Image (cartoon, rainbow over all chains, first blue to last red; front, side, top):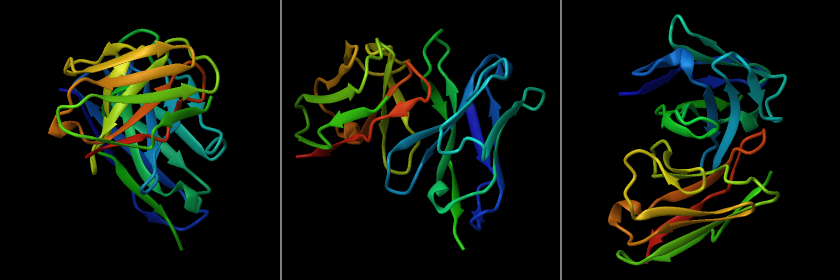
Length: 120
Length: 106
């Protein structure tokens, strides 16, 4: 059974930094692209960033230059380093695994989500 | 690519058919997925490739369309189907979601 478990969410001041982690199990971690998707309170889903199995990275314009996605295949863990945080970054952050169907960049497994609150 | 979903809210009685629409601001071929999200839960993948059901998804959920116009149909609504539904395109980066359609009990 695929499991994704986020950790690291918290309350942080504007301009501060935070690192989210996502511990994965139940699948061959190194073979799959992984992503972060966020959801502001009461709002819809917003894609944040993705990292391919080979390490290619992609970012939403809203976080480019501030957030960094990375993965440690030896630890089966996905990370999101968030710097220069803003109030508008307040959201539940989900890690998500890409479906094992070639050329289909949708997410068939999701973590339970971690709340990040940016406020003074 | 901007994804526009309609209607924002759909009121349906149990057992009735629900038809949800998703329009892309430019063509995305069949690179379109649908998700269901219930309060306090993570999204669940229903459809990928515009019309392929994900693993374990009941046959009452079906997707259609290509290019810019897509439809998710729930043939006979069950109590557990009342939720918010999102479409997502993956033709181009950045990946984008629609704002969602809430399916509520009539």
